[in-house]
Structures are given as C-alpha cells and as structure tokens.
Length: 166
Image (cartoon, rainbow, N blue to C red):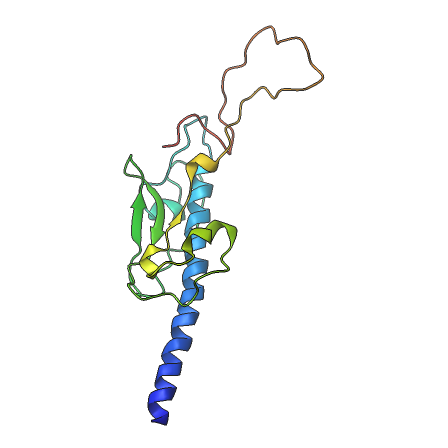
C-alpha cells in the first residue's frame, strides 16, 4: 500500500515539474517566433518562420542570428511539438500532443490566460499573435507641428511592425 501511494505521489510530482517546464519551453518558442517576426532585414516584410530550425539560425540574415538557443523537445512527451501554422503555412506557435489533464487550472500569466480551465495539455497553445504588433511609420506625428510635411516619406519597415502579417 505504501509503495503504491509513494509511486502515485512521485508520478504527480513529476507531472507537475513537467507542466512547469512545458510553460517555460512553450513561452521560449512564442518569444522566439515573436523575435523572428519583429526582426526586419533590409526592408523586407515581416514574416513568420517556415521551420523551427529558422529560429536557431535566421536564414534571412547573413550573420548568425539566433532567436532560440536550441530546439527544446516537448517535456511531457519527450518528442516533437505540434506546430500551429498560419494561413500562409508558416509557424505561429507550438503545443504539446499530451492528452493528460493539467494540474494547473488558473492563475496563469497574461500571455497564458487562455489556458485556464483546459482539459488537456494539448489545448495549451503557445502562439504569437501577429495582430498584437503595432505598425510603425517612418514619420512620427508630433503634436507641436500643425503644418503637414511638404512630401510624404515612404514606408520603411521598423523592427516591430509591418503592413503584412505573414
């Protein structure tokens, strides 16, 4: 009986630890995808990565530009993540394939608030929302200026914005 209780407790402890690791790793992927999207190269349009390997070495850059240190496996399954793709087929997020029920049901951070009440880890989607990125223009509006500029400055893509989400 004691061995059964100890085994059950150990399984719970391990699942809780893996759950915390899932939250950390998933957030690392979300941040890396955001960094990739927000990094503009030579005026190119912002875009999401085609593969997770693009986060390790950005193919758009001549120099080595890393958005993620290494590819972390799904801590619950030990395997690959399920990719969440946008309409253009590019990666906008990841999630676990684990059908286990999460212990954590509330008290999530702002970025993970949608995880509350989910019945499986596979429902925890670590997705970068491209609509949350503010669009920048090259001519900032100043409240002191009442005269419009004589010529319009063409749009120059900034590091955090674009006209096209994908």
